Length: 189
Length: 142
Image (cartoon, rainbow over all chains, first blue to last red; front, top):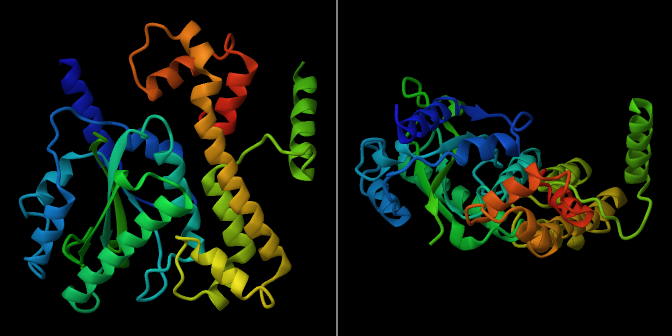
């Protein structure tokens, strides 16, 4: 097995091991270890195209869309960040999770990387409203990271996908579907 | 030796708790800083700052606006947390300069990039200068 293949296997193990992480167990070392595994030859993802694709396919699912389907190959982790009901305000109980992300993103191993913040909802409510709310919440996390924690804004990209990519597809209303994905989308140019 | 080490650790912990020495060299992680904020101000935030996000100084401004109703512990914690976030940012920004000499001496063949340099300095910590070692600790990168 060549070294590049070995790296790839590690990256996949990292992905498979990346479940939804509860606030009390999430550590910045875990984030650095998972998000720092960058496989070679991964696709370049344009966050603007992601938003366009999902907006044009509301209610039809996003996982199979051309650009969204490429995300699966990238280093990523799911983080549990809770918001007030129908609001973009992160609840105080989840401040720690945002702080942990800030600790990881300021570490030299990740400091030269760009990240995509993807907001997901469950299927309660209208798909269009869910898409809008998830975008606003992803924006809120980006703003918290870039202002409160001084992460360079050009490293952060926020996109909402609403209810279109449930973690538990057999039960779209499962609260586990409400989550935030943090995805390494490559080096800062 | 073990006992001496644990004594030193206890003293260091006490100093940290009591806040001995000013300005304090110790910095805390962003996660610990905002956990402290959530603990001291969570109830006030939920009561007075509904819909306000932890961004663009929103929480700070909201708590200031409602200062009369906000618990004194929360008011003082907010100030401390804001300062400790700035301290950690400053500590991280200082590492490159403080460790420049150690890096040039001890990490000559290392691949370019901050992460590789840090990896080298961490491995060489026994011969790295005290100031650089302290800077790495203060940055939270150990």
